[in-house]
Length: 65
Image (cartoon, rainbow, N blue to C red; front, side, top):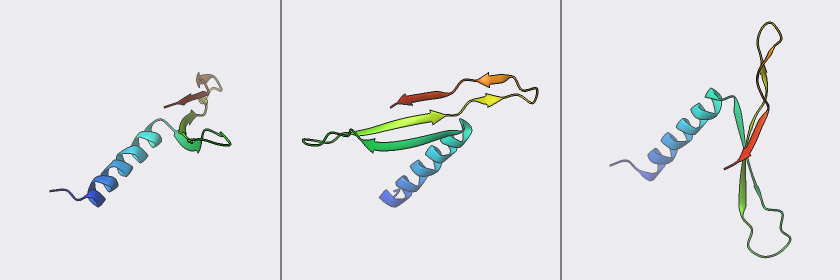
């Protein structure tokens, strides 16, 4: 049986690999509300990329999950 620590370690490893594959960052913040129940907001950011010729190959991308 996998322990909770092993499962967490595997999940974090897989998440790190996914973020690295897409050259992405994950930023988790609260919803900014001053009162009431706060909700976490997870934002994925991927910077644009260019080819060696200087042509942009991917757009800047940002989305919430």
